[in-house]
Image 1 (spheres, rainbow, N blue to C red):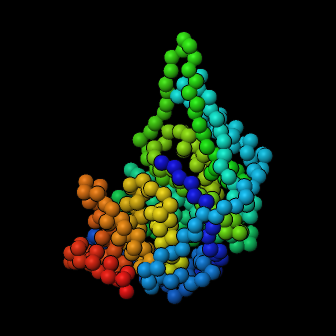
Image 2: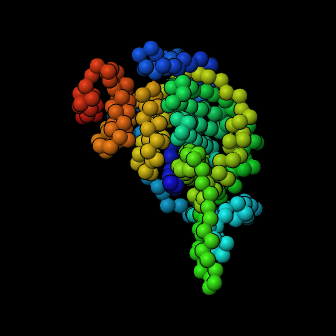
Image 3: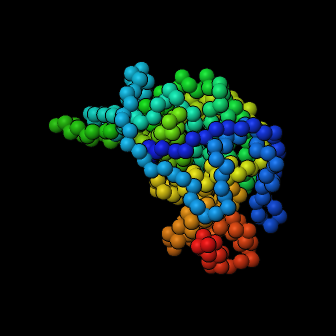
Length: 351
């Protein structure tokens, strides 16, 4: 599954504050808890210009797509991405033709002020959201990591990455996000189809959002199995330099802040409104909402609960949505009936 989104978003900036350790672990009852918010924001934590309002059910702003003129690609970045895609993509039949084209570029990659990276493992039970906000000659990095299966809980960390480590790769990132691979069947007399392909049991999620100084956004996601297919390869190229830079960064734990909750709410709402999420990606977001959820998320989570099917996955999804609503509204899901939690959530947003 792959998706594209081109958006215009609100501007952001960053502030500094002291490190505060975070305690995130299952309690004996099975409930996961997060340390209370520190008096000041986490160190180098990216924050919006306006203080986030988490007191009502008002939806976080997800701006509508805006039509912009298509900016030209840098020729070297364009040629490099196309060359690597052609080299690495293996058509299912040797006589088939491979076509590479590109979408409309509405982001100035030379002036990126923010990047958001999503990644997760289906079998591993993880989801990670990493936000980088430019501040002078460095990016302030905030990483939120959720583990569903092993040591269930959440960690929040901060770090920095030099702008110089990423800036040379910005234009290649943008080109790769907009790249489209097509395999055109060619039938030659006397030749069989010769079908081939590769697949893996490694199911994962990858997403990248680029935001320039004007607030224009470019976003793409892939959720599926590792196989070097036409949807997966461009995402791998787009995120490679970012993964390498983050692997070299030193992260320090810190407590959850309202900025984290607001950022998470925006990502959750965007996931539900702008694309059809892979089932386990949505479940990871619901798990994270039990810790980072806030009232602006109540309408979206109610929507998840209402659309859930009656099969095993649907019933599990509905329970996770109700658990998240209970956590946001400070209702003990073990003591309050699911129907009552749904009614209280609906009543909360009618006020």
